[in-house]
Image 1 (cartoon, rainbow, N blue to C red):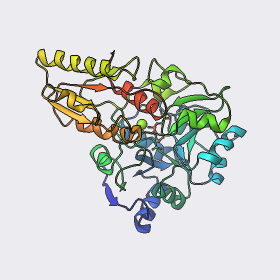
Image 2 (cartoon, rainbow, N blue to C red; image 1 turned 180 degrees about the vertical axis):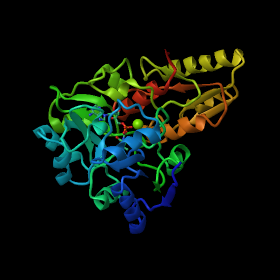
Image 3 (cartoon, rainbow, N blue to C red; image 1 turned 90 degrees about the vertical axis):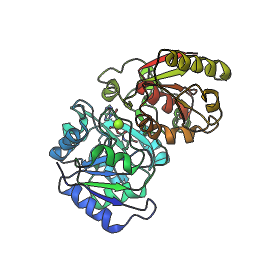
Length: 356
Ligand code: TXA
Ligand code: MG
């Protein structure tokens, strides 16, 4: 048991006192949950192996899943990584601070507990005033995975963090809702061509435009198949999952939406006839389709606004578990642009998938 202090902070103008207090906790080897523009992170001093070990314990995280190091400026980049390729600067100069994580050669100052024994380190500069202030005040790079219990949906609001980590961490900085709602895009620049390890808030198209060449998008980055350990160790663990079994209905062609809706409705009816309580995760344009047949209908956003869907996704999965239904059925979206990040999360969260 740890005594947890929760501070409400203004995301645009965080109180100096709260951030200073939190920064001191980081310097003293403690754990601080803080907002970023993607999801909340659970931070510790990246140079302090004992502090980072505590992150794994607090989250119940498997020890073979490495942690992203967060920096606040380019001078810190050279403290945590070495032999940084040109392409890294090309991307970082355009997209940092922002939801981009780069896999780079590890500097020996970064302990192996951060990288789970790998010679690479994942680095990002987050675009959130509270995160940047915290790292600047702590004056050390901050190792931080998402601030959820391992396996749970990532936290996009302060109360999600309180739900998962209260009495496990020293400080929670609550700045309300995060902006993107899905995690950063992870790129491995050490392979040729560069490889997408996790789709995220910046799209593949954004990154290819800046690099001026294609990047490889392996099956596991789509949320399909299994990642090989050396490529993306975290990808092999079950993720983002609600306790409620989740069935994802995917379309061959999202231009023919009616087929998807009919297949989803059939799945609902099938479970209802077998006596289950059923929820549907749907959209502003389509939720009416299930009224009267499903026990609950959750609207995750509008099909016309994939940013809204991404922002609400994890909160919707957490709400699902409060409904006390036996099973949930979700309509998929096309895995293009930001939809690729959404579908990666939903495929990993699902217990089974059906094609419409
Ligand atoms: O947006 C984000 O990236 C959020 C916020 C808090 O910054 N962080 C986040 O961390 O999503 P986490 O730990 O939930 O996901 C990090 C992923 C894991 O799948 C991990 O396996 C991978 O990054 N990763 C970290 N270091 C790696 C490395 N050296 N090689 C391969 N994959 C790595
Ligand atoms: Mg995570």
